[in-house]
Image: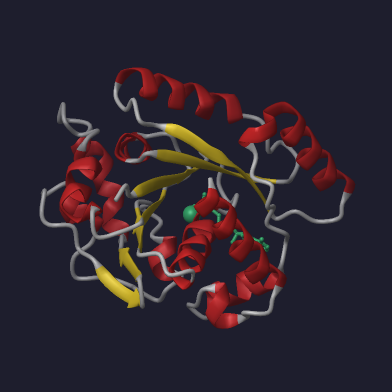
Amino acid sequence: MNTRIIAVVNHKGGVGKTTTTLNLGKALALQKHKVLIVDSDPQANLSQSLKIEDPKKDIYHALVEKEKLPIVKIDKNFDIVPASLDLSGAESKLIMDVNGYFRLKEALKPVTEKYDYILVDCPPSLGILTINALIACTEVMIAIQSQYLAIKGLNTILELVEELRKNLNPYLRVAGMLLTQVNRTVVSKNIVESVQKTHKEKVFQTVIRQNVAITEASTVGQDIFTYAPDSMAADDYRNLALEVSKS
Ligand SMILES: Nc1ncnc2c1ncn2[C@@H]1O[C@H](COP(=O)(O)OP(=O)(O)OP(=O)(O)O)[C@@H](O)[C@H]1O
Ligand SMILES: [Mg+2]
């Protein structure tokens, strides 16, 4: 079985990386795939959005202390590796080690076979934590908020992916670009059209519409399928999961 490891990236903040890791992960789990989501962001938003605060062990211990990857079961077919704010201390430590870019890859190795999908939520930077994810993964999903200035910096990510593919991770491919927070404004429409025109088949057909249920769900510590299974956002993430599993 070939596990698909997908890094959800964009060094721009607030574009929907964490929301997508959580809800795409849950949608895949509901579609009977075995899923692990990994919080690799020192903001620890993914963990917080599931009400996992101050976990005893978190990804920091696996990356920095080289301990076993701590895995917490959330639901059927759905596990998480949590983060805590301690992770902000990891970057300066990892950078001191020549193998500091390979820690996530090493940590995932013993558990990879247990899962169909591993989704890694990256911080809003292209620093060593994101590079760890890009070296550990088989695919990268680029979340793009359909708002003004969204496309700035996209080429930087694509160039980094290409560089890593050539030199460190020959298996790396772009799973796709995901347009998020799409609404009916002219700006949003223009961004969607422009990204689709420029990047064509690299863009997921499914777009994630702006939906207040997403914010409400995260404030009560739930995924969208638990909080509002009939919402637009639940439909969108269900469709995205189907599209991802067919690609
Ligand atoms: N489709 C959506 N509709 C409405 N609100 C959304 C949607 N997607 C995300 N949001 C909201 O936008 C904010 C940013 O989303 P999220 O935290 O997923 O982005 P991020 O890329 O992980 O941010 P960061 O770069 O800080 O990690 C959150 O408050 C989230 O609830
Ligand atoms: Mg985030």
